[in-house]
Length: 171
Image (tube, rainbow, N blue to C red; front, side, top):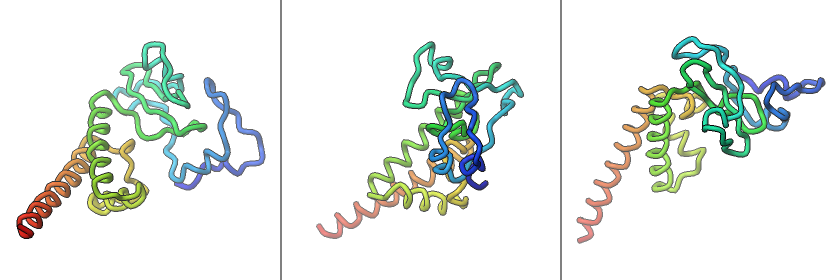
């Protein structure tokens, strides 16, 4: 999907409540925006744009504390800063745990290899057989999270074995 057309539209952008604004510059930064969710993928319930304080028991978190929230099952997704564009797909508690766990493993590998963010995502996309445009943890389902974890752990394991072999050979 191309950049949000509102980024270049001449008319003023009306920010949906409760957002204070939507930034053209921020819209341009999101290269592959997902559609705003209107119904929940889990329960078909209604989805609303809310302050994330509704999710976190009255306390707002982050510099852009907004999210799309299912009014029935409470699945949610955050927003790209200064936009109304979702960061990914709605996620229930288990999918959020899976995404966080697989992303943590990915970041360990990225740091261990000294890769830039761009190179790390290009590597992961290639290993997973998906396009770089679709390689976002916020877009992953349970199976993709498991695949990303497996790919990263296999690579770290193979690298560890190789390092041990080199050390042993050096004596």
